[in-house]
Amino acid sequence: MKKIIILMSAVSLLLFQGCALLKPTDPYAPITRDQGDSKAQSLSSSAVHFSMNQPITLPAAIETALANNPEVSASGFDAEAAKARKDSALGALFPRISTEGGYTHYLDDQRLVPARYNGEPGVFGDDIYSADAVIRMTLFAGGRLINEMRAADLLRQSAERRTNRTREELVFNVTSVFYGILAQERLVSSLIFSKSALEAHLKRVKDLIDAQKAARVDQLRTEVRLSDITQKLVRERNAMTVQRRVLGNFMGMENTSTTLPLAGTLENALSELIPLEDHLSSAFERRPDYQAARKELEAQARRVDVARAGHSPIVSLFGSYGGRWAANPTDNDAGLDESEDVGRVGLNVELPIFEGGRIQARIREEHAKLAAAQERLRKLELQIRLDVETAQLNMTSAFERVQTTEKAIEQARESLRIEREKYELGKGAIMDVLDAQSALLDAETNYYRALADFNVARAQLQLATGGSIK
Image (cartoon, rainbow, N blue to C red; front, side, top):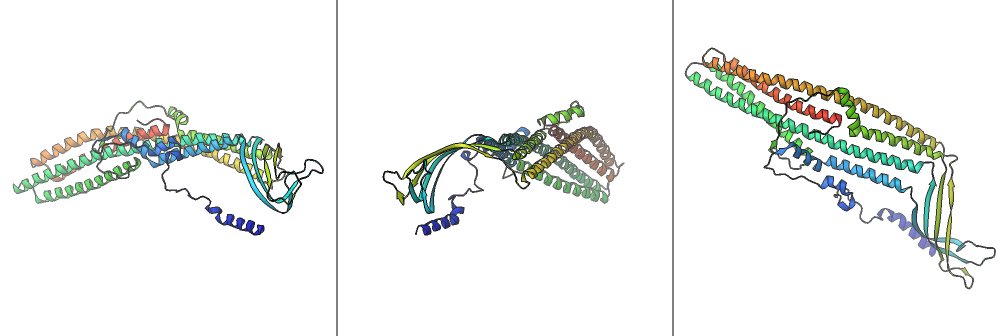
């Protein structure tokens, strides 16, 4: 009967072992403060609220994005996970204390505790219960535990720097889109002005036709040009709407307003250029992703040491104290208790002799990963140099375009004024007026885009060098 009960218990454990957790974790439930670190939680729960009627400045947009953007929040939780792994590795250096209990049924009667001298009477039974307090501590492992802890700590530092880089990239993205919207607003305003000017000019052409001072073809050509301006205005307004939605996405706004007002200026002043080598030196010192890559490389070196420790012996201290109980003993001399206390303490030494080549294979694997990490660091160094050079070239090029197109606008306005006067006096052609109007619009378009490119390139240079973006 006992055997049947034991068999049924074993089958029940096998059937229900996957259902031991009565309330599995919901992967879609929000993480509450008691489930995660408060610092990491603040990244996802903090929000910057602003009035939809008040214009948003660039600092406010950046602050909102840093508080609400999911990628920044996820990066913060990744850093917390790395910190938890470091704490877990650190815990392996300390003693482990646990309680153990069990029940064992034997086919043959067993002595409750080993005999302490020859001929000692004992209690025997086939059902033995046990309960112990156990302490274990690794005394020596060839540096495996300490290097695992150091590698985990380096990865924690790397994760924190990755989080900082994620924040910097988000700031750049918000800045880039913000300046793009400002330039797009001015471009749309320029198109609206051009459309109004053409409409007024079309009315004047009709008046001249009625007075028999202009040909019908002048009206047709003006209407064609007005139609072209109208479709450009529709296209650029749509582009601005898309940019606003992108900005709202970066800011973590679920309901993106396409009419959200922005407040800011596009600067066109170029500060004194810093030599390229100084920029590169600054980038290697300050860029979080470069520092993170170095920490990952150092962590991989520690992993190599962990793998090498596989050849070393492991010396452990162990001790326990507890009791043994015999249920329904089959042999019990008079005066003997059916329970005994037991205790032990000692050292355990484990020395690998043959592992089928697994230790050496693990060492080769970690060495290969170290070499790969070195190459990735070298690749990042080359990429940083390219980023800095590209950003500096883009900034100087955009600034020169700003200076050139700014002068072109004044020239185009004067040219349009002259052509209109000539046309009014009957000394000019309508195509000359329309061409002058188109040239003015092109000059304004080029100017505002160059202005946006300059501001974005300046932010790009600060991102490339790891500096704070204003």
